[in-house]
Image 1 (cartoon, one colour):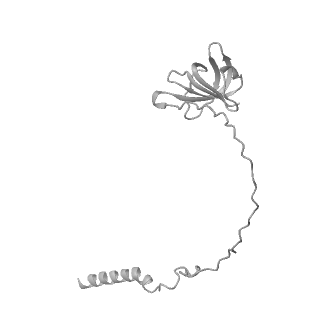
Image 2 (cartoon, rainbow, N blue to C red):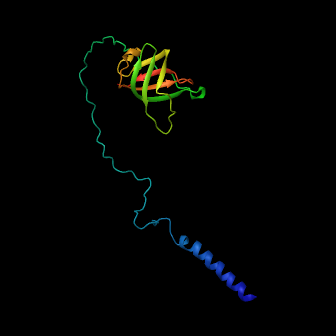
Length: 163
């Protein structure tokens, strides 16, 4: 019974020595990694910045002219997915301005909801051409790329014409 206790005691001492030993002999001044230089604290490094004298330029008088305000781009209505509204995109394949219907080839991605190729445009819908701002439905041309916000019944609340 004495022999197993002695072996256990030697094992515990060896384990403790292996754990504590390597850190016990390292001094705080010697670097932990011999490839890294020691870190010196609180020493000022010489500054390479040369103070420059401020350059004074002669004052010039510039006449102030009133600035004409540009017409702001009308805002498209926010999409409200909680009430069933969606965004669809595609290329216009046909337009019926009298009945306010746009036929288009929808571009699909992983999040798209497929809709019928003919979309009714509401009477109060906002139609915007990117380069011009608000326009009428008649400005839409076959082959144009459009982004539309559709209500829950898949009728266009807004149409943005990209080209």
